[in-house]
Amino acid sequence: MPVFSYKVRNSEGSILTGETKVESRERLLELLDRNGYAALEIIEKNFFTDVSQIRLFRKKVKLVDLAQFCRQFSIMLEAGISIAGALDVLREQTLNPTLRDCINDIYSNIQKGLALSVVMGYFPNIFPQILLSMVEAGEASGQLDKVFVRLADHFEKEYKQKQKVKGAMTYPIIIFCIAVFVVVIMVTQVIPTFGKALTGMNVELPKITQAMLALSDFVTTYWYVFLLGVIVIIILIKALSDIKGGKQVLDKIQLKIPLVADVIKTMMTARLCRGLSTLLSSGVLILEALEITQRILGNSILIKKMDDAIENIKQGRQLSASISEMRYFPPLALSMIKTGEEAGNLDYTLQKAANFYEDQLEEKIQKLTTFIEPLIMLVLGGIVAFILFSVIVPMISVYQSIGQDF
Image (cartoon, rainbow, N blue to C red; front, side, top):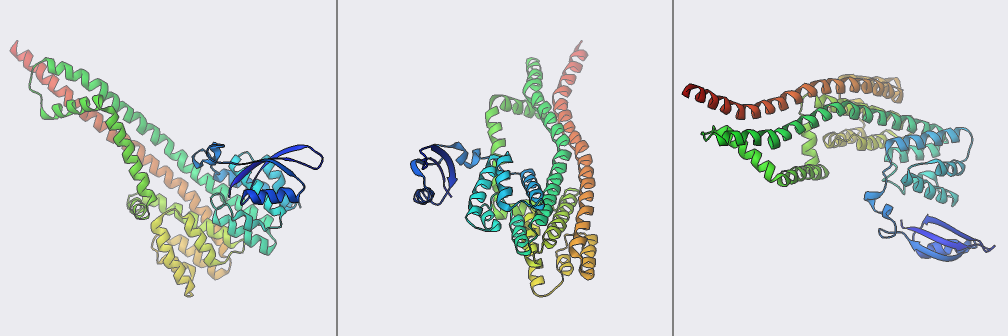
């Protein structure tokens, strides 16, 4: 929907300015005239008049923003403030400009009498499907305040989970970058120095030393080609992950790597249990809850397997039996789901399962990083040792031969 900035004169002659989203310039003129404003200037915002209209420059709405939005919304609804009143406060307090503009638009449409779930549905790039479905269910049941409490809990836990993964991987990444920097310094600075010394001795160098000197010379002379190659590889991997077939290949590889596969499966189990628990406790039907949770799993292989599970449930099979056929989720999770089905408290059981596997995820990530750190040091240490061996051994041989001559 296009964004228009406007300057108008009211019935008292005062000049007012503002900004809004409407279908067209004509529709904005109609709305202004209906409310007694005379339009003086209307400008449609575009790439040239406002760089924030370019997606690249637009600030993203993150999980922490959604968590704060839902938490503040729930507090005001529980205090008895109307939806419009709560939105009016939120649009003033929200710091993220993208979310603030979105809340402004929601507030304007709520004033026109539209349902909150309908208006939020206009922004699928900001509000995930799990939020939209739960808000719709909350409106139908009259428990919108409780729904936003559950949504706030859900987004907060998801945010903490991602932060734990990022935090655990920070140290290995730093070690890797330092090690790569050391290798680059050796190839571009140390090896050329040894190369000059060896060349001045007029001796025949081993093939491995000649290859290492040639590599050093290439990297030093054509460093931009090497850098361009690295950038191209990164772009190709990113492009491959955006293609359906390519993402399936990458996801399949991830599920084959020891330790990494264990972390991914635990993460997917926690997401499945948390998503289903949050949706079912808000009154969303099991099939719709599965379809929504399927989208937040994040692994294309599991998403494809989930299609079969959903079809089995449509045919009358139990959730536990359908998910067990996927052969990806651990037996304990399947057992807890089956217990919840038999006891009639599936949402509560799934919540307990989600808590358990979120704790398990933290332990498995720690185990993975404990393995990765020495592996990085071992591999890059081996590379450094190989580089030194290729240039130092010939020099030792030359000095030994010189000593024998004397």
